[in-house]
Length: 255
Image (tube, rainbow, N blue to C red):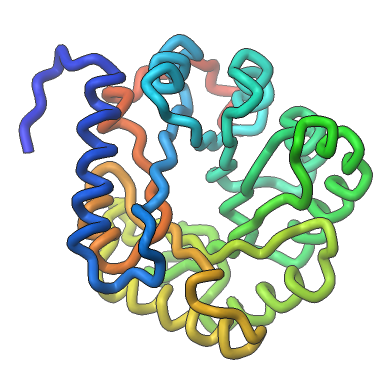
């Protein structure tokens, strides 16, 4: 679908948001009756563009790099909902949790070690989080549904044990669901979604949870509509809203 390059960030956002609602209405595979959540992926983008989206009504933003989200969060209004969606090294956990007191969700938990680090960091920072209206930190288990060695995430067979550990042992974390990136080119195929949905079924059965309480995060700029139609509850859209990535931040942020 062609969109002129001169469209503003706010106009792009409105277009994507409308497409999210339309795809959610079309979908017969979703457990929720609410439209899928749109996470505006603002990595490498200047705060001015985030504010343009915020002023147009967007509240949920996704960032991939710890230093970048820590720099941006204080410059945005306090009711901004932050999702961390990049690979999180355990030695960066404390900086993330203390740097963004209102952090809502980390979508990329793929080891017991990372879950424990997050749980401990949030536990040490509960008062500060409470002060900004944040309680437990939401987390998603990242699942490698493509079998690509280059992708982070647990293998599908290891999804339930990690989800159980978070649910049972991490009292400062709230298990929110499962996330996947999809194929090497970041597209989501039916088999990726079927794998993620099967993981959810196993997790719900194993932990006694209802399907509607375990979200699926799948779908990005190139395929968010088909991902929603396949059942995604949470889509992560960047370049379709913000334009092609210009690196506004230095390369060291990616390390």
